[in-house]
Length: 193
Image (cartoon, rainbow, N blue to C red):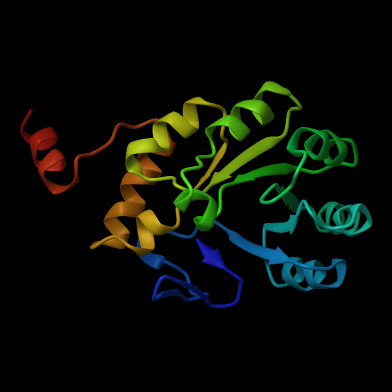
């Protein structure tokens, strides 16, 4: 996974815009603030550009149009969108490829999870991919997958782990239908059973 973003500070842990080559190249991702930026990222090889759902509908349409021009995908992130259902339906009509259900760190600290929003978006049955970010970890990845997410984004569960590569591999396996590995001991148990 490569991230084409600025460095972000998460409680003293800074995420760098570099590939996690130990878990394999899954594609490139960029968050954009304008229709000009996304063209740059698509030309540079990004597979997905994300535009905030709070952006002007013209900006969102521009990101979608650029994605279509380059044969890529545009994601609309619902973080802080007041009426997530209406916005989801609106951007689906103009061709969004992915709806991002995103529970931010501050929202998580207040006890929120992505599950209600995920259920609402999945229940609309719009035929779009649904990504989920915010609070995703090995213990919730199967629940997120089974609730309708087609893309699972794990942040703190990876960058805050003692072994980020192992955490990423475990969440990836779960996302692809596997079971929680139980770490090294779970792997050893599976090896001898």
